[in-house]
Length: 442
Image (cartoon, rainbow, N blue to C red; front, side, top):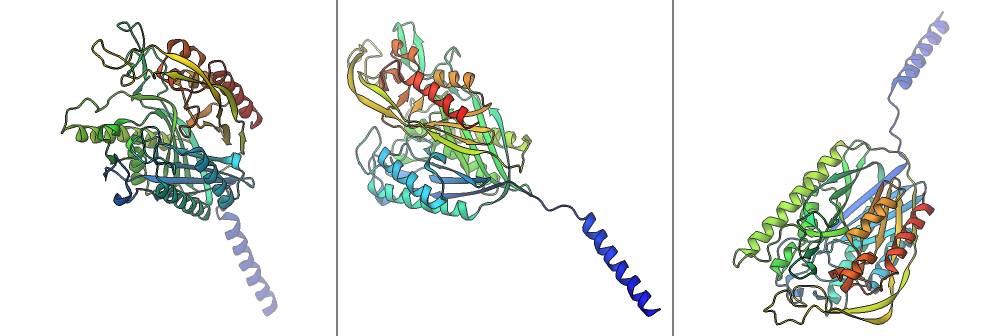
């Protein structure tokens, strides 16, 4: 009798245990892991080269590591104007070693702020100074950020969506007075510009933000009205607002086929210019941050595994040099100007190399170059790409400077005079190469 009673109790206990196990919710499963980090790179005041004397707002380097199916991708964006080609190659090598990832699956870019030191040991350069100490600071910050991002890898969910913000215009406008294109802000809406705000959100399985990726076609030049101060400009402001609102999740801001801000502070009389510029930066940053967060708030996220892959296909083009540049401070825009006439002369130059590549992360194709891309050419790629979420990303201001659509050369737009690639190479090479790499990674 005692044996039967004991067996009955054991059966009841096991039955209860089985019932408990069968009714418990399944543990979350993710085929995706993400980690991110942010490291400040604001230079010390005693290491600021001229013309910088102070700091308007801090600047950062941000990194995100995405892992799925045994493959990784790394994206690193710094609040700097540009990174020289030798330094960029060195940094990418360090990222590859630190994160154990192929170089083709790394995107190292900048926000193009015109109010920071170039990451270049050469102290002299285009518009802005370089600094060997700043190269060392950025290198150390990058290694730290990537290391922290790898250490923070966790099961994650991801989503992608498109917002919009109408804050920019094309930088070229037809002038009946001059009978040609001049460099200004187009307010007619007849010149191409991309107002799309691309947003990727990475979150933990319980819905906590891990990181954001943004893509918007703005040239960050508002802070140029306060030339002596370090600033992350509009991308820096937008990123910081998102980070404050999301509990510190790093927000990486990438630059698309850029237009120029519709509103600037350059013509504001002193002493109000600085205050005006800072208000504009905050306003632009607030609008972009609000749009990004609203877009992220309604997007669908998934923990499913994603495809990760990368391709790189450098392009060599015949070189040229055009003088003067089509800018109001380089050639005459008014009858009383003391500048030379805007009679553009082109001469042959050495061939130039354009670094180009594609990083594929799930439904996102990041088409990146080490040069700016004109809005007209960016619009053509968007019409041709087989991937709905294709981001055009300008990484740095490299040797080619601008990837220009062929039609712009005849108009001598600023980009056409500033590019070092001859007509007939960059447009075809950029479009064909981008599509070939995108197709190979599908």
